[in-house]
Amino acid sequence: RQPYFAMSSTSLLIALPIALVTLWLAKNKFVVEALFFLVVFFAWMYNGPINAIIVNCVAANLRARASAISILLIHALGDAVSPVIVGAISDATNDLKKALLVVPVALLVAVIIWGIAVFVVQQQVSGDISVVPPGVNEDEEESGIDMNHTSLTPQMPCGDSGAAQEEGTAGAIVITPTAPPLPTDEEAGEAQGIGLVSNSSTSQQ
Image (tube, rainbow, N blue to C red; front, top):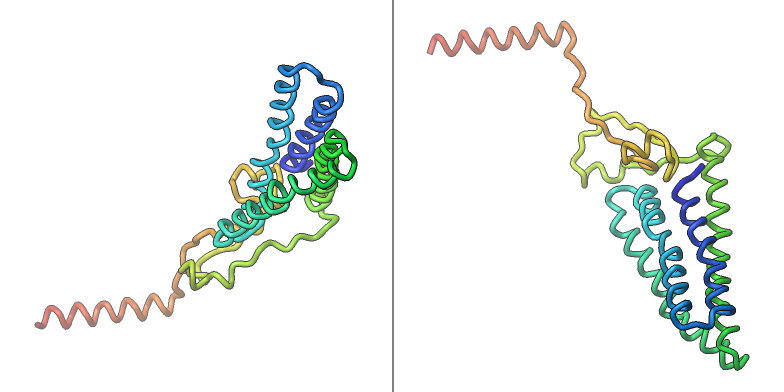
């Protein structure tokens, strides 16, 4: 089970009927305000899990860019255009309530998409779908990591709820520094000989 997508889908599924009740059944001002608060609360509960998925599915040097693109799309496809869409539907139907049905419809679409994602990630975890972890070769120079003395450990798919999540490394490659290989007997003998020669020269001086 994919908990991040599951939580996001479930929270919007809770907000959906509350939004419908707020639009069509609630008449009292205080009841409407209370229900509206609950709609906003559950509708925005997805924010934390989805942001966690975003940063866990990209390389470390791309996390800020991925978060910025996410925020840009939220506003560009959300509060920037929604007043125009709702206003156009309201003018065409002469009914603001019908126009506001765009909100629960959008919630339903998100519930379906994230609900599908739960099953897709479940298949990834079970091995039915292969997942190629993000590479780090391009960033070797930028990060300054000596790849000759590191080990790359692919983790579970993005947002997995297993041990990879507990380590905070879901959906990424963990670069674990390891000790350089031990010298062979011949290399150790040569190094010892060089050291003896160097000590002898120093003592003569």
